[in-house]
Each structure stands twice: as structure tokens, then as C-alpha cells.
Amino acid sequence: MTDKLQQDHYKVKPASGPANPASSPQEGGPKGTYLPGRGAQFNTPNRFLKNEKTREHIEGIDDWQETNLPTQYIEQHSKTIVNKVESPDVGMSYSMNPYAGCEHGCIYCYARNVHEYWGYSAGLDFEQKILVKKNAPQLLRKFLLHPKWDATPIMLSGNTDCYQPAEQKYRLTRGLLEVCNEFNQPVGILTKNSWILKDKDVLQEMGKKKIVSAMVSITSFNEDLRRTMEPRTTTAKQKLKVIQELSSAGVRMGIMMGPMIPGLNEHEMQRIMKAARDNGATFTAYTFIRLNGAIKFLFQDWLYKNFPDRADKVWHLVEQSHDGKVNDTRWGVRMRGEGNIAQMVAQQYKKYGKLYGMNAEEWSLDRTQFRVPGSQGKLF
Image 1 (cartoon, rainbow, N blue to C red):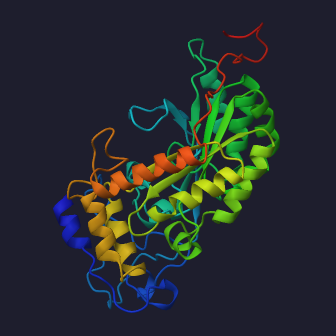
Image 2 (image 1 turned 90 degrees about the horizontal axis):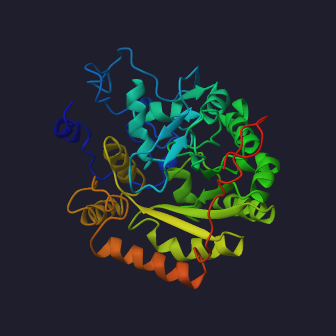
């Protein structure tokens, strides 16, 4: 299905009635109800598949795919776990993701589009069908044993969250951290889940060696907004607790404010930075909303169903920040936006970062301690 056809097929008009999805039936879920606990409300077409299932008449009695399904974990044995990152503006050279798809259900997540490579949809499938790379720790060990590996820092959660609910069952992230600790391999972490505290012991060991740095993603202190925008993530209050507890344990902690969405959460930047600083965070990063691929259809649907009173305004503000579109593919611009609104957010970030002493320290992950277990001495 072409982009134009997708746009015509999924064009959403402003909804009427209350903005609370729990009390306002909307199309997308079974019998037209809003699906609680999910960000996406339908499955967008997979651009790699020739055929798709559609429901031509919502009142029809023909068989149709059930949408309110429990999360399904699909176990697999992968061939690789460490990926080289080619994008020059994401701040990482390598990443590893033990899970594909993410139950957190963040409606704006850029990783949704990647799920299409596996034959699934970027919509509900992304939240309901989680691919589990069961041999991830073994693959990492094999990777680190390569004689030419130079201990370049690796990012955990470069794509999907490594501490999403699946981690409670599989503990693959724990296994990856244990391998990194054994090799003294530097690693960065980005998460929205307080489950990271379960690994406080190994993180504390790695923190002493300066081979770990962690960021917690905080987008809003408005719980009504968080529950609809990132339905299965940890509350902002719990995220601050994570920062406080791990920073007190000697782990370098920071915050990711992303994405900043004009008309929804961009006004919270100062509050987020101050609260993070007060709880021990020392560095920050942010991104500006961009709606690439299927995400623009999912986000538009979500926006008009949850915020019909301001949906038009928010949508147009996003367009104003991306040269009349809601997405931009240009390196260096796509994740910051341009124009007055994006510039205002950038100025806030710079001003309050300086005010609260963020990003002031010179700090880097230590690559010099890397060693192959059982070998004589260090690699460098």
C-alpha cells in the first residue's frame, strides 16, 4: 500500500465527546471500544507484505482478528545480538536488543517500524508479539571474544526497552550485563522501567569500574498523559526513585526527555530536569517528536481519540517543526526539528541544563579495563 493510499485509508477526523478513552467508545478495538493498556488501537499495513487483512464493514459478522489479545512471547535463537549503528545522530556506535517489539506501547516509538521487518505490524503487533532472543548472552560472549574487538561502548535498548515486562520472565538483560561485567565491556542503558533496580548489584559493580552509564526516559509528570501515551511504562515518580537509588549506588545516571511534543509535554522540560537533578542525575538528552513511517497514522489516531480538544493544534505544531510534514529524514535535523517551536524547545534545554548543572562534567566510559576472561593481562 503506497503512502498516499495509507494516508487516505487511515485519515482520522477529530473525535467528539469526552477525551477520556475509558469512558468514550472509539473505533479500533473489539466492538469499537478503546483498548486499555495499549498505545496503538489497530494494526497498520506492513509495507513489506503484498496481502493484508481488512474489515470492510464494522457491523459485519464475518470472522475478524481479535485485537484485545494478551501479550505473546515468541522465542527464537538469533544469529547476532550486537548491531553496528549507521545513523550519525543517535549518539551510539553499537547497540544490542534482547527483545524485538515492546509491551510498553509508547505510541510515538520509532522502533515500531522495525517490527515490519519480522512480518508484523507496527501497530498492535508491536506491543502484543514480542520476539525473545533467548541466546542473547551467549551471542554477546561470542562477539566479545573476537580478537579485533576494541571495547567500543555498546548501548542496551538502542531500539526497544531491555527492561520491558518480558525481562521479568527471561532475565536476558541481566545475562547481558553479567557478560559485560565479566569482560569489563563498557555499556550504556536506556529504559522506562523500574525493573532495572533488580540488577542494582551488578550495576553497582560496573559503576565502580566506570563501565556503565544509565539513562531513564521521562516524558511527563502528568499521569493521565503517561497512561495513554506510554501505557505500560513506570510512573514518573518511580523513575525518579530509580535515578536516586542507582546514583546513590555509584551508577552514573541521566535522563532522556523524549520525545518533546508541542502542545502536550514540551512545557514540562524544566520540571523534569530539576526533579532529575534533585534525585542524582548529572546528564541529559532530548528528542523532538517525529512521526516516521506507520507511526504517523498510529499517532494521529491516538491523538484525536485522546485529545480531541487540541488534536488539530498539536498536529499542526508538529508539521510546523518539520517543514510542513510530521517527519524529517535529514541527519542532524530529524530528531531536533526546525522552526520557532523546535528552537524554543532547544533554548529551554540549553537554559535549564546550564541552570541545573547538567552535562557539566567530563566523563566517559572506561575502555581500558576490557579483558578476555582467563587471558593474561588486559587487552590494552
